[in-house]
Length: 287
Image (cartoon, rainbow, N blue to C red; front, top):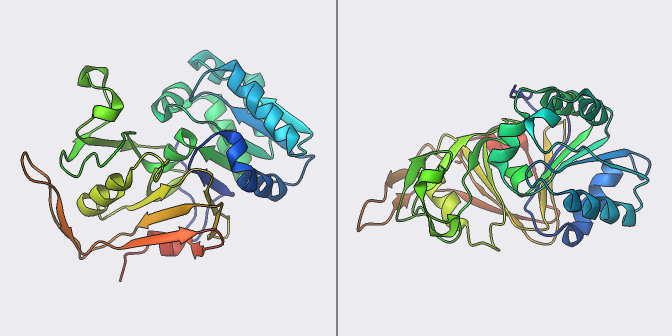
């Protein structure tokens, strides 16, 4: 049930946040709450990526401290919860839907093609702000990137995803990157989070080189790329958003045992708080 978006914009406002503890993103969240209609708007938190009731309680307390008067948690932890009409109704009536951090593969496995999935997209089409942090942001693109730390991929390369239990390695010891389809709320783009904090710059460089047909967006913690229905986009927060632009002129030699990635012609944009761009520019090939 992927949303194809519009030619020059999106059905509603999409906010992609790079992660970090909720309290660290106050600048972003005050901006989103006001954008969604102010303190009285209905804020609904989806804890599916990390199914913890305490996570929902923590989010509720935090958003109430920002002045939000109507904060709810949609208790979608397992597939049966995603088929619950009460949960779907809560999301359908929301003004701000917030997908929390954890596992983006888990979010997809639990909610894809369920009433909750349909309700999220219906609310978004009707004007709700759809926000995701960390896993909630990674899964919003046409492609999601398997999380791994350090310069993973520059020497190991790219493998088919999603990650498998049979891989047998902790994520911070993975030697390859993996990508797979996301929800496609941002067509033409792949998204990663915790970019600076977890040293994931190698993700964007490898993918920009080996998949130059896609725009790859990397988000630092406490910082958001907010894309409005008009197609205008802006950065909010104290750190950076990096964009590996589509580059038809890029030439690359994939990494192989004993030899790292070689790539030329990559285009990388570094955006900061107040930077403005457009969805069209993000998707357009670099000059």
